[in-house]
Image (cartoon, rainbow, N blue to C red):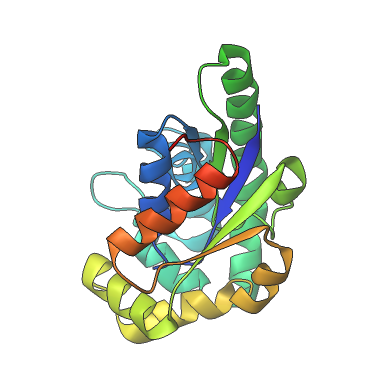
Length: 201
């Protein structure tokens, strides 16, 4: 069963692509979802994050203030490194466990590893191919500001903290530009799936 790495920076529409692929019969392993699950109240990692970054990242209900944590780490490379050290290993373990389970079940057309840091964590080496979702940067900033209520500067800080799209393009097998309409994205994605035999006309 083919393992496809799906990556793209914040605001590119990677989650939209994942949903299309899920609807078309692929198993999707979502790194962001895993990151949320392993930092739920009562999980050991949440206590480690509080120790590293202070109790201001914990909401009154005991959950992680993700926006507050992002504001701390995405403008400070050293703090970002600490966060990565605490989280990446656990996320990778869960992804690998998910891949094994999907292969055992063998009920999907393929396995999608949806991970914004696919290259940075070395996950691309576990994939048969890598698809990159891109979009115009101003459009990305606008999307995230509307979606999350972030400021343009906060979004640009996050974009700068990630590997540049130019480098990702060099490493990717397929590039999906999502600067246009959802229909255009769907058509391009369907074309790729037809070319590779995942869908039939």
